[in-house]
Length: 210
Ligand code: HEM
Image (cartoon, rainbow, N blue to C red):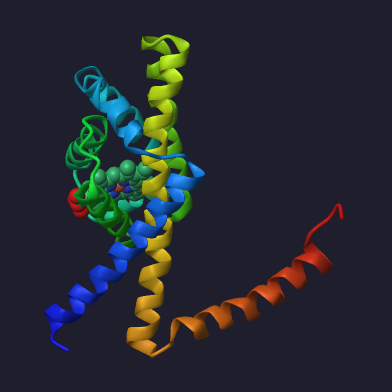
């Protein structure tokens, strides 16, 4: 198979995964077009929060030594990070939340995996983002509206976190197959075997209070 063809096949698999995650978001988060519209309706106002949100994001992130090391070792200017993060935020609140946005968000997740950013850092920073957004909602809207706007934003951020976590596993499985020829079913079986050991270890030695 040619390189392009193989790349296309990979992308299609990733697109299927994106779809699957979004289907779960529809059912479990009640995510719908309405959320996108809730944000879009207020886009000019929500966009004015971008700098404050992004500043809070990086002030917090840079307190973490691992994050600082990744950024420094790769010579990434904070201004560049702020710019791209701001753009991503603006896409969300402007209602530019379509297939292309989700694909881009999946790609953004992969960028972080590439830079070795731990998943828990992504999860925590998503929380920082959401909390700052919630604070601004509470300061600027009456309670019902604040809750509605916050929820809409929160669901999209949650989908992004889902992409990043699943993107990690997706990529790992692809690499194990490409480099070692390990089929996904084999990886799953291996993982199960390891988990049985871990669970037994925890039960017998590490978990109290049962
Ligand atoms: C909710 C969490 C996060 C969001 C929404 C976010 C957002 C983004 C966005 C939109 C980009 C640009 C990707 C592109 O278009 O190329 C990016 C790049 C990047 N982010 Fe994050 N980020 C998050 C967490 C983190 C964390 C925890 C780190 C830890 C060090 C980090 C480090 C980086 C790095 C190193 C890049 C690549 C920059 C480059 O190559 O120019 N990010 N991020």
